Length: 591
Image (tube, rainbow, N blue to C red; front, side, top):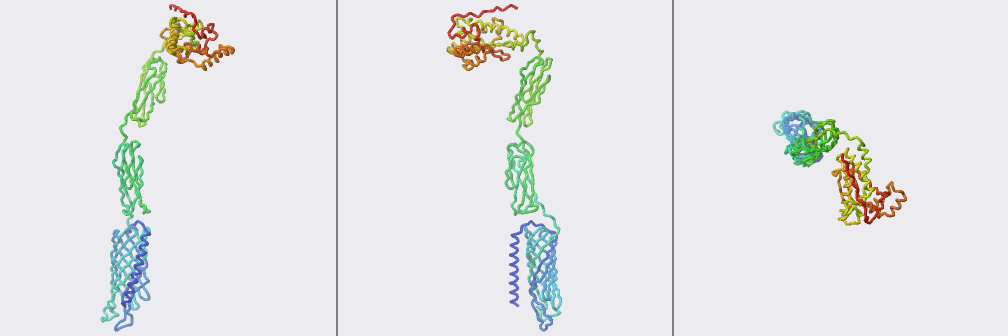
């Protein structure tokens, strides 16, 4: 008897070690989040070592017995109602049999379960009604079961009970077969081990609480360029799992690390913005993500409107004339600006950008021209200028029109002999051909002044480069003074003449003179060939001159050397002339 008990315990330890090894392998391979079902049902294989003595039928004085040990064929079924994730009320059935023997237990009692990630450990203690069937008949006994096991979660509502190991005890009464002289057999005790493995099905129960998160921004209002710190607070995640944080924002650069992110607002326009974080548990396949957002306000620093001013040119015009109006606009904050929305109180205004043109009406008026300057931030400033519209001038006098006079007013440069006029004779040096040119100019210009009273002639004196700088400067001044005196003597108002003297600072070059000779229509080819052979003499003579410019048109006198004039040889002479006539004076007629 003692040997059988030792062998039975050795087998029990072997089975326990086997189930423990399988459990460790399964735990390492499964990692799922657990939900708590309201009801779970177990069904699976059961092995029982009854470990109790039963009487042998047909024996007496004393009654012989045999020890009931392993019952390898078995089936287990259990159902539990879970009050919470730890405590449940369990009902249990177990049945085992072999060669005419069978043991059936009907049990009920509390169960405690410790639920972890993917693995559940449980303990239970049950009161049971044990029914023993032997070849000599059936017998019921009161018993108890104490033990526990491990469940591994495979997928939703489906677990694998890797093993369940229980101590099963029961007491049976064989008084109808065994006399009082054999009290141990008459009240036989069964105290063996029960092992199970199978599947557990879960039903009902509240769904798992989804993960969540809240976010906050500090500070909630900043100026452009100041940082914002955003913090995330996750909840309902598995505290043992590392979480991933994906930060983003519609304002500035985000630098995120775990539960905290910093937002750089440099270059961000003022407004309301949001930071968002997605939090994920990479070890959870389903229901393992949450997100949250935090709002904050970015304010721009104080803004200064643009500075603007406008001006009209001219500011006073006759009726019907046009005026150019321009505005300047700058931003104290150095942001881009644009000028637009031109308006005028009278007349018509058309403008683009910083300039506009005002077309005045037919009547005298004081016209206010306005425009608006706007920067890229929407700040604007307006400015205006005043244009005075006067009555138009009286109609031009009869006679040639302005255009006809400007066409007829052919200006020609005036040429001088060498070293003329001299300091001793400042009124000598204008030859007859040059006096004729100035006389025609004076006549045409006086007629022109009737149409353009503000017009004036600009006289520019030159000298050839042979003299010193002071000498040439004085010589060119005498030449423009003599030319001016001649024009005044022939009726040109002194206030309409302006003089300049350059000495030989702006002399013509040989190439320029050659070009003038080549394009002179009054010179024949034979003359041109002869002239070009004496280029030095022609170059010097071409620089002893006074140029004439008309101020209103900018027309400059034609530098056409008078090669065909009767006194051209005197002009070409490189040595000072012995005698020249003084410029003849013409007495102005009284009008």
